[in-house]
Length: 342
Ligand SMILES: *[C@@H]1O[C@H](CO)[C@@H](O)[C@H](O)[C@H]1NC(C)=O
Ligand SMILES: *[C@@H]1O[C@H](CO)[C@@H](O)[C@H](O)[C@H]1NC(C)=O
Ligand SMILES: *[C@@H]1O[C@H](CO)[C@@H](O)[C@H](O)[C@H]1NC(C)=O
Ligand SMILES: *[C@@H]1O[C@H](CO)[C@@H](O)[C@H](O)[C@H]1NC(C)=O
Image 1 (cartoon, rainbow, N blue to C red):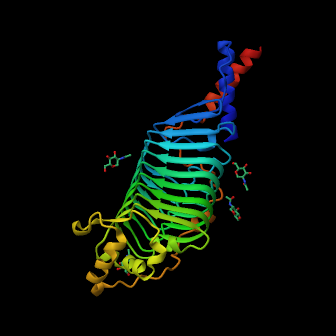
Image 2 (image 1 turned 135 degrees about the horizontal axis):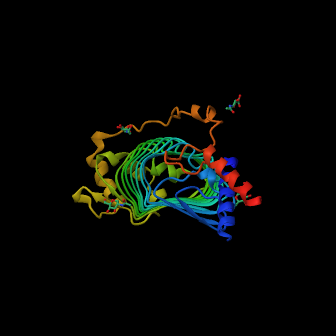
Image 3 (image 1 turned 30 degrees about the vertical axis):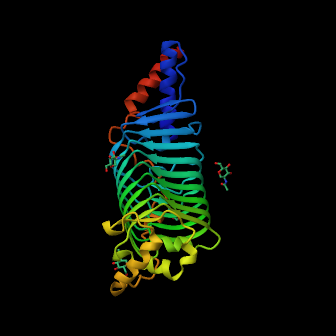
């Protein structure tokens, strides 16, 4: 890697010498334009390891790709901002965003994503903000967001998600704010939020939810030491929501300060205050009482973390890699240098 950068620099200096000009030699991944502390990349995923440390703000946009593979963002610690937008991504694979730390912000927005796989975002530490917004997502797998800690803010908003699977958000620790808002969430499965600890504030508002299954919002509300605000959401008040209706009616005091939550469907209850509708739904669905499944730690595949120590995140490059120089090119460069100094 260092060698490739050195080669590119030598080539750049030779061009400079030939043109008798200072062409501002800065190593930059192919597909990107690097100026000062910023890089703008589009069309394909750049090789992150080729960004120099002086490149602090990285924008990657208008990339259509079947997948973002493991370790794609492994070499990007200690940057300022990483923005990804107008992306069309089939899968964000296991470990694509893993072990990232000390970055001001990572923003992923205005994009379409098929699947966010298990451990796609994992081991992320000490970011001011990690946000995903204005994006359509088909599936968020279990443990897609796993072991995320010491963040200023984890924010998800203006999303359209077809399905958020069980334990999709797991082991969040020491956050100032965890927030989800203004999103359309078709299915939120049982136990979606799992092992949240030391989260100062949790907000969940203005979401439209198709089906929300057991142990979800009530789990957030039950977190000790967290300020949890849940308001202006629209939910489906059919019998699949019975478990929450029961939680509300059993402990109405704790939910009475939540304002503006209403039923969105069925038509009969549309617009009706959730607490008011709860009584009716409770009676109507009493024959269909659900037993909520208990939470068990799912077996999450971790093995690739250990057999991967040789890889340094260089696997994001495409086959059209023009950054490396071949032996003939090196020979030509050396010859040019010799000619120049003769
Ligand atoms: C957290 O990130 C900030 C800014 O990137 C950095 O100054 C600080 O040293 C980091 N703290 C730890 C514990 O890594
Ligand atoms: C998301 O889907 C909606 C239609 O449901 C569409 O209008 C919007 O443009 C999509 N957004 C993105 C970023 O693909
Ligand atoms: C969620 O829990 C309910 C009630 O136990 C159950 O009927 C449903 O199948 C569960 N959903 C999933 C995705 O496991
Ligand atoms: C990976 O790590 C193991 C143990 O830490 C070590 O024995 C092995 O040599 C490493 N492999 C490579 C390719 O560095």
